[in-house]
Length: 285
Image (cartoon, rainbow, N blue to C red; front, side, top):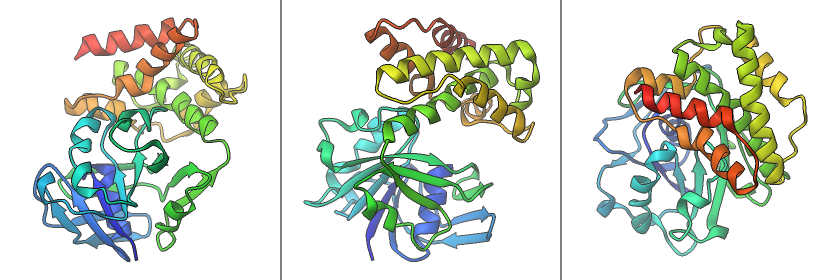
Protein backbone atom coordinates (compact mmCIF):
# COMPACT_ATOMS: atom_id res chain seq x y z
CA UNK A 1 0.00 0.00 0.00
CA UNK A 2 1.38 3.38 -1.03
CA UNK A 3 1.32 6.52 1.06
CA UNK A 4 -0.12 9.28 -1.12
CA UNK A 5 -0.42 13.03 -0.60
CA UNK A 6 -2.94 14.91 -2.73
CA UNK A 7 -2.36 18.67 -2.91
CA UNK A 8 -5.60 20.50 -3.62
CA UNK A 9 -9.11 19.76 -2.37
CA UNK A 10 -11.01 21.02 -5.40
CA UNK A 11 -13.06 18.96 -7.84
CA UNK A 12 -10.17 16.86 -9.17
CA UNK A 13 -8.18 16.66 -5.97
CA UNK A 14 -11.24 15.76 -3.92
CA UNK A 15 -12.38 13.11 -6.38
CA UNK A 16 -8.98 11.47 -6.72
CA UNK A 17 -8.30 11.60 -2.98
CA UNK A 18 -11.68 10.05 -2.15
CA UNK A 19 -11.22 7.14 -4.56
CA UNK A 20 -7.63 6.44 -3.54
CA UNK A 21 -8.55 6.61 0.15
CA UNK A 22 -10.93 3.67 -0.27
CA UNK A 23 -7.91 1.33 -0.32
CA UNK A 24 -4.77 3.36 0.42
CA UNK A 25 -3.35 5.80 2.94
CA UNK A 26 -4.09 9.32 1.71
CA UNK A 27 -3.09 12.70 3.06
CA UNK A 28 -5.07 15.65 1.67
CA UNK A 29 -3.23 18.97 1.68
CA UNK A 30 -5.79 21.77 1.69
CA UNK A 31 -6.05 25.50 2.36
CA UNK A 32 -8.84 25.15 4.91
CA UNK A 33 -9.81 22.41 7.37
CA UNK A 34 -12.21 19.72 6.17
CA UNK A 35 -14.02 17.01 8.12
CA UNK A 36 -14.26 14.48 5.31
CA UNK A 37 -14.84 13.97 1.60
CA UNK A 38 -18.11 13.02 -0.06
CA UNK A 39 -18.22 12.44 -3.81
CA UNK A 40 -21.33 11.64 -5.83
CA UNK A 41 -19.97 9.29 -8.50
CA UNK A 42 -21.54 7.33 -11.36
CA UNK A 43 -21.17 4.27 -9.08
CA UNK A 44 -22.93 5.95 -6.14
CA UNK A 45 -21.81 8.20 -3.30
CA UNK A 46 -18.44 7.46 -1.73
CA UNK A 47 -17.03 8.91 1.46
CA UNK A 48 -13.51 9.14 2.78
CA UNK A 49 -11.75 10.50 5.83
CA UNK A 50 -8.15 11.04 4.75
CA UNK A 51 -5.75 12.79 7.08
CA UNK A 52 -6.18 16.48 6.25
CA UNK A 53 -3.33 18.97 6.60
CA UNK A 54 -3.56 22.73 6.23
CA UNK A 55 -0.01 23.69 7.21
CA UNK A 56 2.97 22.63 5.07
CA UNK A 57 5.13 22.46 8.19
CA UNK A 58 3.09 19.42 9.29
CA UNK A 59 3.90 17.46 6.13
CA UNK A 60 5.90 14.22 6.22
CA UNK A 61 7.53 12.26 3.36
CA UNK A 62 5.23 10.10 1.25
CA UNK A 63 5.64 7.72 -1.68
CA UNK A 64 3.64 9.79 -4.15
CA UNK A 65 2.57 13.43 -4.33
CA UNK A 66 -0.35 14.29 -6.61
CA UNK A 67 -0.51 18.03 -7.36
CA UNK A 68 -4.14 18.64 -8.28
CA UNK A 69 -4.37 22.42 -7.89
CA UNK A 70 -5.20 24.87 -10.63
CA UNK A 71 -2.14 25.84 -12.64
CA UNK A 72 -2.08 29.35 -11.16
CA UNK A 73 -1.80 27.79 -7.68
CA UNK A 74 1.41 25.90 -8.51
CA UNK A 75 3.49 28.21 -6.32
CA UNK A 76 1.33 27.51 -3.27
CA UNK A 77 1.35 23.80 -4.14
CA UNK A 78 5.15 23.89 -4.23
CA UNK A 79 5.20 25.06 -0.60
CA UNK A 80 4.13 21.55 0.41
CA UNK A 81 6.94 19.78 -1.43
CA UNK A 82 9.87 20.20 0.99
CA UNK A 83 7.98 18.36 3.72
CA UNK A 84 6.41 15.72 1.49
CA UNK A 85 9.44 14.81 -0.60
CA UNK A 86 11.53 11.84 0.52
CA UNK A 87 14.53 10.19 -1.19
CA UNK A 88 12.26 8.22 -3.57
CA UNK A 89 9.11 10.35 -3.65
CA UNK A 90 7.65 11.09 -7.07
CA UNK A 91 5.46 14.03 -8.03
CA UNK A 92 2.52 13.53 -10.41
CA UNK A 93 1.22 16.82 -11.82
CA UNK A 94 -2.53 16.52 -12.46
CA UNK A 95 -3.03 19.89 -14.12
CA UNK A 96 -4.14 21.42 -17.39
CA UNK A 97 -1.82 22.58 -20.15
CA UNK A 98 1.43 21.32 -21.61
CA UNK A 99 3.93 22.67 -19.07
CA UNK A 100 3.56 20.20 -16.21
CA UNK A 101 7.28 19.75 -15.58
CA UNK A 102 8.14 23.42 -16.15
CA UNK A 103 5.91 24.54 -13.27
CA UNK A 104 8.00 22.59 -10.75
CA UNK A 105 11.39 22.83 -12.46
CA UNK A 106 14.19 23.61 -10.05
CA UNK A 107 12.10 22.33 -7.14
CA UNK A 108 11.80 18.65 -8.08
CA UNK A 109 14.21 16.77 -10.32
CA UNK A 110 12.82 16.32 -13.82
CA UNK A 111 13.06 12.51 -13.68
CA UNK A 112 10.88 12.44 -10.56
CA UNK A 113 8.02 14.41 -12.13
CA UNK A 114 5.19 12.55 -13.89
CA UNK A 115 2.96 14.78 -16.04
CA UNK A 116 -0.66 13.65 -16.13
CA UNK A 117 -3.58 14.46 -18.40
CA UNK A 118 -6.80 14.29 -16.41
CA UNK A 119 -10.24 13.91 -17.97
CA UNK A 120 -12.60 13.57 -15.02
CA UNK A 121 -15.67 15.82 -15.32
CA UNK A 122 -16.35 16.90 -11.76
CA UNK A 123 -17.68 19.94 -9.93
CA UNK A 124 -17.04 21.05 -6.34
CA UNK A 125 -20.30 22.18 -4.74
CA UNK A 126 -18.96 22.91 -1.23
CA UNK A 127 -15.82 22.19 0.78
CA UNK A 128 -15.30 18.44 0.68
CA UNK A 129 -18.33 17.88 -1.57
CA UNK A 130 -17.91 16.95 -5.24
CA UNK A 131 -20.15 15.76 -8.07
CA UNK A 132 -18.25 13.43 -10.40
CA UNK A 133 -20.20 13.27 -13.66
CA UNK A 134 -18.16 10.58 -15.41
CA UNK A 135 -15.67 7.96 -14.23
CA UNK A 136 -12.94 9.57 -16.33
CA UNK A 137 -9.35 8.87 -17.26
CA UNK A 138 -5.79 9.82 -16.35
CA UNK A 139 -3.02 9.49 -18.94
CA UNK A 140 0.71 9.49 -18.13
CA UNK A 141 3.87 8.78 -20.14
CA UNK A 142 5.29 5.30 -20.57
CA UNK A 143 7.53 4.45 -17.65
CA UNK A 144 4.99 5.62 -15.06
CA UNK A 145 3.29 2.26 -14.66
CA UNK A 146 3.71 2.53 -10.87
CA UNK A 147 1.49 5.61 -10.97
CA UNK A 148 -1.12 3.70 -12.98
CA UNK A 149 -1.03 0.97 -10.33
CA UNK A 150 -2.25 3.45 -7.70
CA UNK A 151 -5.66 3.45 -9.41
CA UNK A 152 -5.98 -0.30 -9.88
CA UNK A 153 -8.74 -0.55 -7.25
CA UNK A 154 -10.69 2.45 -8.54
CA UNK A 155 -12.97 2.91 -11.57
CA UNK A 156 -10.77 5.75 -12.82
CA UNK A 157 -9.02 4.45 -15.94
CA UNK A 158 -5.33 5.34 -15.55
CA UNK A 159 -3.02 4.32 -18.38
CA UNK A 160 0.23 5.18 -20.17
CA UNK A 161 0.91 6.51 -23.65
CA UNK A 162 3.99 6.31 -25.83
CA UNK A 163 3.32 9.84 -27.16
CA UNK A 164 2.47 12.05 -24.22
CA UNK A 165 3.37 15.25 -26.12
CA UNK A 166 0.65 14.60 -28.69
CA UNK A 167 -1.87 13.62 -26.02
CA UNK A 168 -1.21 16.82 -24.07
CA UNK A 169 -1.54 19.09 -27.11
CA UNK A 170 -4.73 17.39 -28.25
CA UNK A 171 -6.21 18.01 -24.81
CA UNK A 172 -5.03 21.63 -25.07
CA UNK A 173 -6.80 21.88 -28.43
CA UNK A 174 -10.05 21.17 -26.62
CA UNK A 175 -9.26 23.39 -23.65
CA UNK A 176 -8.19 26.42 -25.66
CA UNK A 177 -11.63 26.54 -27.28
CA UNK A 178 -13.21 26.99 -23.84
CA UNK A 179 -12.19 30.65 -23.83
CA UNK A 180 -15.18 31.28 -26.11
CA UNK A 181 -17.60 29.98 -23.48
CA UNK A 182 -15.94 32.05 -20.76
CA UNK A 183 -16.16 35.23 -22.87
CA UNK A 184 -19.77 34.73 -23.96
CA UNK A 185 -20.90 33.15 -20.68
CA UNK A 186 -22.70 30.53 -22.74
CA UNK A 187 -22.34 26.77 -22.29
CA UNK A 188 -21.46 24.22 -24.97
CA UNK A 189 -24.50 25.11 -27.08
CA UNK A 190 -22.68 28.25 -28.24
CA UNK A 191 -20.78 26.06 -30.72
CA UNK A 192 -24.02 25.65 -32.71
CA UNK A 193 -23.65 29.28 -33.83
CA UNK A 194 -21.84 29.07 -37.20
CA UNK A 195 -19.77 32.20 -36.58
CA UNK A 196 -18.68 30.96 -33.15
CA UNK A 197 -17.86 27.55 -34.63
CA UNK A 198 -15.55 29.29 -37.11
CA UNK A 199 -13.84 31.13 -34.25
CA UNK A 200 -13.34 27.85 -32.40
CA UNK A 201 -11.83 26.28 -35.51
CA UNK A 202 -9.43 29.20 -35.77
CA UNK A 203 -8.36 29.00 -32.12
CA UNK A 204 -7.75 25.27 -32.42
CA UNK A 205 -5.90 25.62 -35.74
CA UNK A 206 -3.44 27.99 -34.03
CA UNK A 207 -3.01 25.49 -31.21
CA UNK A 208 -2.33 22.73 -33.73
CA UNK A 209 0.31 24.79 -35.54
CA UNK A 210 2.17 25.50 -32.31
CA UNK A 211 1.75 21.91 -31.16
CA UNK A 212 3.38 20.63 -34.33
CA UNK A 213 6.36 22.88 -33.64
CA UNK A 214 6.64 21.15 -30.25
CA UNK A 215 6.62 17.69 -31.82
CA UNK A 216 2.94 16.84 -31.45
CA UNK A 217 0.96 15.00 -34.13
CA UNK A 218 -1.91 17.40 -34.84
CA UNK A 219 -3.88 16.39 -37.97
CA UNK A 220 -5.73 18.99 -40.03
CA UNK A 221 -9.07 17.57 -38.89
CA UNK A 222 -8.53 18.39 -35.19
CA UNK A 223 -10.30 21.81 -35.34
CA UNK A 224 -13.41 20.28 -36.86
CA UNK A 225 -13.38 17.43 -34.34
CA UNK A 226 -13.30 19.93 -31.45
CA UNK A 227 -16.35 21.73 -32.84
CA UNK A 228 -18.12 18.40 -33.30
CA UNK A 229 -17.27 17.38 -29.74
CA UNK A 230 -18.69 20.62 -28.31
CA UNK A 231 -21.83 20.27 -30.40
CA UNK A 232 -22.23 16.63 -29.35
CA UNK A 233 -21.84 17.24 -25.63
CA UNK A 234 -24.56 18.22 -23.15
CA UNK A 235 -25.72 21.59 -24.47
CA UNK A 236 -25.65 23.08 -20.96
CA UNK A 237 -22.25 21.73 -19.93
CA UNK A 238 -19.87 24.35 -18.55
CA UNK A 239 -16.09 24.02 -18.84
CA UNK A 240 -13.85 24.93 -15.92
CA UNK A 241 -12.71 28.27 -17.40
CA UNK A 242 -16.35 29.32 -17.77
CA UNK A 243 -17.16 28.03 -14.28
CA UNK A 244 -14.25 29.93 -12.75
CA UNK A 245 -15.39 33.19 -14.32
CA UNK A 246 -18.95 32.67 -13.10
CA UNK A 247 -17.66 32.03 -9.59
CA UNK A 248 -15.33 35.03 -9.63
CA UNK A 249 -12.26 32.83 -9.27
CA UNK A 250 -8.92 33.26 -11.06
CA UNK A 251 -8.84 31.57 -14.46
CA UNK A 252 -6.28 29.34 -16.15
CA UNK A 253 -5.92 31.67 -19.11
CA UNK A 254 -2.16 31.29 -19.38
CA UNK A 255 -2.24 27.48 -19.28
CA UNK A 256 -5.03 27.29 -21.86
CA UNK A 257 -4.41 30.16 -24.29
CA UNK A 258 -1.41 32.16 -23.16
CA UNK A 259 0.89 29.18 -23.60
CA UNK A 260 -0.13 28.96 -27.27
CA UNK A 261 0.75 32.62 -27.74
CA UNK A 262 4.06 32.34 -25.85
CA UNK A 263 5.31 29.19 -27.56
CA UNK A 264 4.02 30.39 -30.91
CA UNK A 265 6.13 33.53 -30.59
CA UNK A 266 9.21 31.40 -29.89
CA UNK A 267 8.68 29.56 -33.17
CA UNK A 268 7.56 32.55 -35.25
CA UNK A 269 3.98 31.26 -35.44
CA UNK A 270 1.23 33.88 -35.41
CA UNK A 271 -1.60 33.24 -32.94
CA UNK A 272 -3.83 36.34 -33.16
CA UNK A 273 -7.08 34.61 -32.16
CA UNK A 274 -5.73 33.11 -28.96
CA UNK A 275 -4.00 36.38 -28.13
CA UNK A 276 -7.17 38.44 -28.74
CA UNK A 277 -9.51 36.10 -26.88
CA UNK A 278 -7.18 35.88 -23.89
CA UNK A 279 -6.91 39.67 -23.80
CA UNK A 280 -10.69 40.10 -24.06
CA UNK A 281 -11.39 37.67 -21.25
CA UNK A 282 -8.72 39.15 -19.02
CA UNK A 283 -10.21 42.63 -19.56
CA UNK A 284 -13.74 41.44 -18.87
CA UNK A 285 -13.12 40.50 -15.25
